[in-house]
Amino acid sequence: DHALNDADPEVHDIIRKEKDRQFKSLELIASENFTSRAVMEAVGSCLTNKYSEGLPGKRYYGGNEHIDELETLCQQRALAAFHLDGNKWGVNVQPLSGSPANFEVYTAILKPHDRIMGLDLPHGGHLSHGLMTPKRRVSGTSIYFESMPYRLDESTGLVDYDMLEKTATLFRPKLIIAGASAYPRDFDYPHMRKIADSVGAFLMMDMAHISGLVAASVVGDPFDYCDVVTTTTHKSLRGPRGGMIFFRKDPVLGVDLESAINNAVFPGLQVSKTPTHKGGPHNHTIGGLAVCLKHAQSPAFKTYQKQVISNCRALAKRLGELGYRLVSGGSDNHLVLVDLRPMGIDGARVEKILDLASITLNKNSVPGDKSALVPGGIRIGSPAMTTRGFKQSEFMATAELIHEGVQISLEAKSLASGPKLQDFLKFVASPEFPLQDKLSELKKRVE
Ligand code: PLP
Image (cartoon, rainbow, N blue to C red; front, side, top):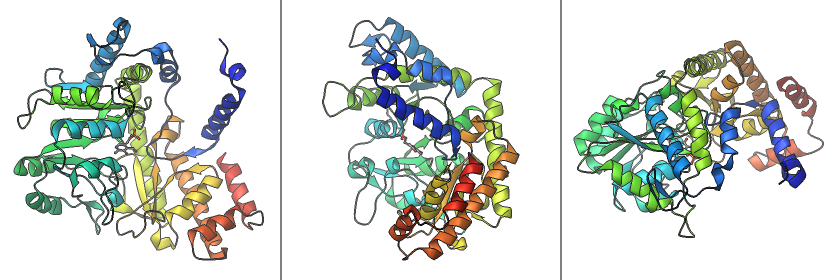
């Protein structure tokens, strides 16, 4: 049995390079974070060797006494981390990630072609909430269910709850989904609850992006109002890559959510006996998640999440001073959405230039955008660099580095041979790129 560098130097070297990239770059992708050494130790452990289909005490494979103990501990910690009463709420910690968790909820409580409403993707929603385009049903959610997305009020950048209410009254969805991938504000859960009740719909919150903030009680609490809450575990929660589903234990709209959801996870979707599905629980992930959820109950975690918010506010403030327009005018959470269109540039070009300078963030659609491939904005998140120890002053300096990258992007755009994104990318990649010195100088300062 050999260590990785002996057994496979090629993979070892790729991991070394990725570690170096993560270490040197400014990691500003709002959905990413750096998990702890303790979590990675559990994820890289012998737990990966075990099959354990079923739930603790009810398995289809033998030898699960320690896995039962682990999964039960993980469930208890999950409820405790989110301040939940185990008589009222249950949790399934087996979803392999956020998208499967969402699809498992849909298959648990909906029938094929039932109607759902989630936030539209170009307005900050997630593909797994049911994106439709006029030509195509894009994700599995919109293929198997009838989706009518709700949207933002473009003048304020806030969810248009009045329009959601009017549309829900006509469309009569069975499920309304709160939560987003690129929304800098809190959701109005009481309002959404009222709308869901008025049409007899379930209310689900996908808190993937903000679950760390929810655990630390620094944003609104979706558990007070929702029937089901899903999350990924690797974003602001800072755990291993995975998913969880929380459900109310009392029946909702006549449905026993506990058995419906547990059955949807297994044997509904995550079953190893059919070649088309991914397989049983990832016990190594559940081990890492248990470690993460212990930490999520500590005072240090609360301090970290408060810093995530303070850092994001500092970033937003400095970007505002530098003349940038922020969608909704600011942020209540861990991310800002910058509308670059008034600057005469787009998110795709800026993302590329910043990438070359070791600043990693996403291009992102902003309300009113025409193209998803060349969107008008960028999304910037604070969780990862806060884990690396950044405080407000470092985030202000980060805003300035981004600003320099935007200036280089504008200059490159004006010098490129044509108006298309492809012309720009080719120009930037060419050995004669005249702004290479400026870019290298920025990269050196970032690193
Ligand atoms: N839900 C939301 C709101 C997300 O932002 C994401 C991922 O970015 C997901 C679900 C999907 O998570 P995963 O990539 O783990 O499937």
